[in-house]
Image (cartoon, rainbow, N blue to C red; front, side, top):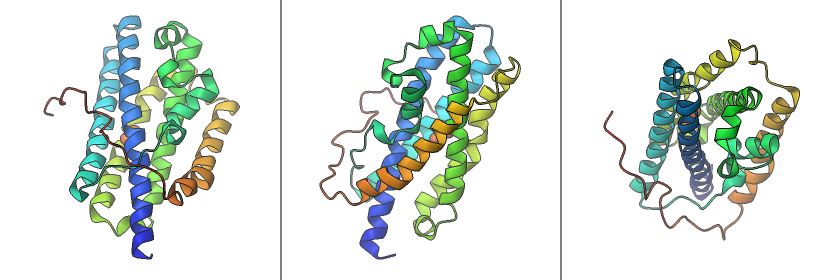
Length: 220
Ligand SMILES: [Fe+2]
Ligand SMILES: [Fe+2]
C-alpha cells in the first residue's frame, strides 16, 4: 500500500481501538461498582470482571504507547466509533454515561441484557481482530501486529464470564434485536464511519489522553 495511505489507515485504526479500549474499561468501573453492591457474594464473577477491566486498561495503554513512540496524539474520534456505546444506545436508549447502572443491576432482565451486549461486543472484537491479523497492512507494523495478537489472546476471557453468568440463569441466548444491532453497528463502522474518518483531512488530533486524570494503575 502507498506509504501515506498505509500510515493513515493504521492511524485511524489505532485511534478507533484506543477510544474503544478506554470506553471499555471506564464503563466496566461502573458495572463493577453496581455489581459489588447488588451481588457482593458473586466473588468469582466480580474477580473475572475486575480482570476484564484490567485487560482493557492494558490494551488502552498499549495503543497509547504505540502513539507516544511516534510522537503524535491519536485522532479525535468520538462515541460514534465505540461499539459498546452504540449497542447500549440502541438497546437502552442512552449511551454508557447516561446508563443508570444501579437500576440496570437491580433488574435481572436488564442486567442480563447488559451482559449479553458485553458478550456480543467482545465476540465481535475477537472476530474483528482475527480479520485484522490476516491483513498485510497490519502485519507491516510489527508493534501494532503484536498488540492485536495480545488482544486476540485476551478476548475469550472477556466474554466467557458473562456467558457463564447468563447460562446459569437461562439468559445466554442473544435476542434477535441484539444480534441485528451488533451486525448493523459493525457494518456501519466498517462501511461508512471508517472511510469517512480516513478521507477527512480536517479530522483533528486529541489534545489530551483520555486517562490523563486517572491514578496510575497498580503494578501487575
Ligand atoms: Fe480490549
Ligand atoms: Fe475485550
